[in-house]
Length: 77
Length: 143
Image 1 (spheres, rainbow over the protein chains, first blue to last red):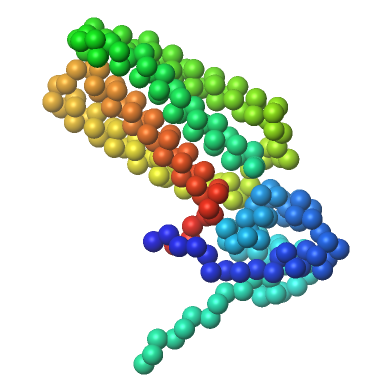
Image 2 (cartoon, chains in turn cyan, purple; image 1 turned 180 degrees about the vertical axis):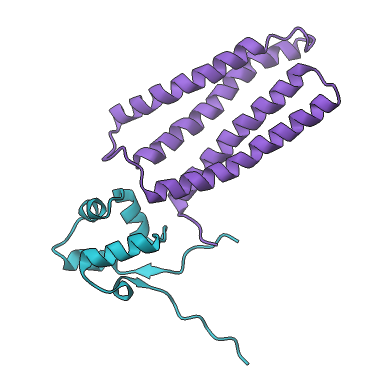
């Protein structure tokens, strides 16, 4: 079953808090295209774990500060 | 639009256009009542396949001249999208192959066997291209 990702991220905010870093600059530091950075920011692409760690490393923050995943509701017992 | 996405559009357009040219050259012969033994299909097929390869190269160059990409290197997302598209397209090559095999077993004319294979290749290219374009636009799905 194909479904959209539930992963959200703070990349846009982090870019602005880091000297208004452009998408092109972030893409260059990650070794991906600018379109991929846009897709990640907009939640149209979940990056690999490796790229996710690289993004966190660029901003100098833990992975949890960049990406969020909603809590799964526990089924009623 | 990234370099790889532009390339996908070029190949998709050529897959549709190339087969349309082939049908334009072969269908009138069939509709005119020419026997499949006498239909000239080999030359049009070879020319449209060869033309598609050349058009793919020329098309990509022209697109880059008109709208240069920031980079001509693909990345991990391009690879994932390519893999997904090829997986969808690949199934139609198999369907075309199985169809051709069945036709051969029934000793059907070579014309139909070759055309079943060619159609399989074309549909494969089109479905692969459509899948990639949709995924580029709508996002890479998760399962």
